[in-house]
Amino acid sequence: MSALTVSQEPHQNWDDLVRYWEDMEWPEGSKVEIIEGIITVSPAPAFRHNVIAARIQRRLYSVIPEDWEIFQTLAVSVPSRLGMFISDLVVAPVPEHPESDSHIPAALAELVVEVTSRSNASHDRVSKPAAYATAGIPLYLLVDRWAPGGPTATLYGEPKGDVYRVLSGVKFGDAIKLPEPFGITLDTGEFPVG
Image (tube, rainbow, N blue to C red):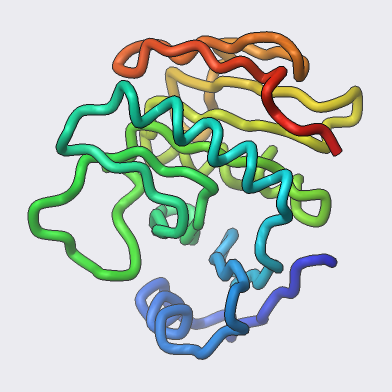
């Protein structure tokens, strides 16, 4: 199943777009994001997709500080890139006084993890890393189940402008290390393929 886009009037500003995103009644269970100023509605992730996210989450819980959390459905906002993204995992300190119940500023995130879906993998490969780098998120882990040469995991870091540097890249079956403050190695051989 593919993603659906909802067109907005071109003169709408960011605040109006976010208000529309927050107030609209979207199909239950769907993933609704704003990507480059366009509201995108995608089906809920598939089983194997969720298994990968859950395995990464389990490993991360053992190393994050007590005042941090791992969020699966919390949106991160990048207004400068007209983006409101619901990443598969967002690791961030819990804000003492959150500005919103629906999202946090992306700059609060320490790590974002995206697991590609066949229908919208290009967003995870292009639009989202550019926005996450722009926001200064230190680490971006892309688990690309649908990479052209076979499933891969790529860790991006050292954001400059809207570009990350590739810190590490592996094919499924190999290990990938997340640097401090995480300091863990993920065994991608534990990730289901297909």
